[in-house]
Image 1 (spheres, rainbow, N blue to C red):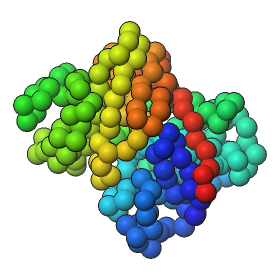
Image 2: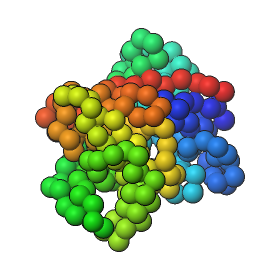
Image 3: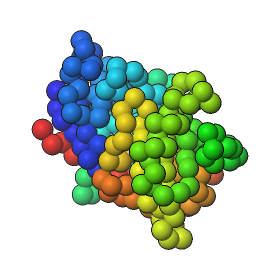
Image 4: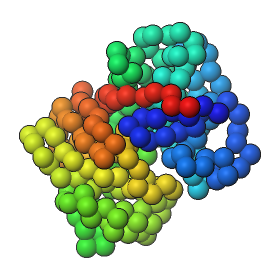
Length: 225
């Protein structure tokens, strides 16, 4: 397996199904299993450390896109499929990748467990809280397993730091806190109505822009082992 990083969010890329995900993942944030691929497309499964499957991952699919590009020599566009969702990725200089992550759905704010939450779907579920990111260690596990989210949810606590910027920390479903998250960046930008946006995580910044309800995410991905 190859080890890849997207702003410190580390995934192992495997070309066969792991026999034991929890044993194989080690200190990584998950496993990107390449189920099938051609020169400019790949179908992947994204495994969380607890053995569950993620419906979508911005960083995971970006890693898959860069992995496929480096393997096949494709330097422009590749397509990554995760279940019914598909993302088109464009290779940019300096290890950057721009992804078309598809449509985003934003729900009205609601109160859950005494916290104001905006639900966002980026092909996977998110609960965005506008507040102090340092509150994530409390709010993250509280909302991830709350009965309002029967399938559990990813959680972000974000604070506006400029007209088009936010600082955020993320609690990923089935993982815990991670250094960065691609779909979380999109969820934060959508919930806070920032467009275009720079979302700053402890691991680094991701750029988000929208065309209507369609989200585009730009960030790095590189092999680290």
